[in-house]
Image (cartoon, rainbow, N blue to C red):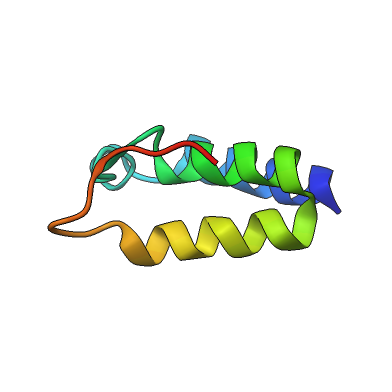
Length: 67
């Protein structure tokens, strides 16, 4: 399941418009964070942490945040 999630995120990274990919307010980007979280915590917990990060990706949040 981890490999499927990572492959889907990589497809997003390759196909999403440049302005959408550059809109992330965090370092690493939200898609990279999701991959790191899935690799560190497993598919379900990592996916949950990645979705939580997406909900935080707006003003006034931002900065460096690693899983």
